Image (cartoon, rainbow, N blue to C red; front, side):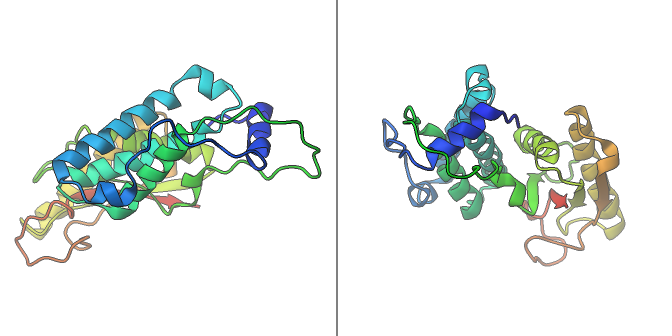
Length: 241
């Protein structure tokens, strides 16, 4: 995340100048959650692509435009929602945050009017910095290869590691309850190592990662032994402050 005096002035202006509504009304989080999984993938994917494009736009990054922070947040949350949707799961939390950040990202700030500065403005805070989980990557059955949907989640976690000043990240691998305990312990570690390697390629310090494998011992969804559950095949990226 890049901050400068121009961005600080933009935050000050936003405290006193209202943002106009987006040119076209967007679907609310409730509307999105009511869609089918296939339709929801398209809507969330559209929001992720728009957020990714805005976060890379040099004019937005270098200008006094607070939409850059919302683009970063939308990219991360929409990426998490897409990860859940890969297993046909509608995660209300990430869908809601994706929709909210995307709508805020769409708002065009008006030119600020001159105001008398009474006190220094509060510091700009990345909303992702307060989250305890930086991302979740879901895996195919019996696979340690991160899917394509993992890329935006890992990219956002690496960016926020530096921007938020986190001490490090916990990279914890998990499996579902199919297969033997010994096999799953090894598989969960391979998954965690694969995510850690992707983060290293993105520029994260390997020394800031605590990599671990938990096998089938900590399922996200409790299931009988032997059952394949897509939500349990995962790597959780947690924040260490």
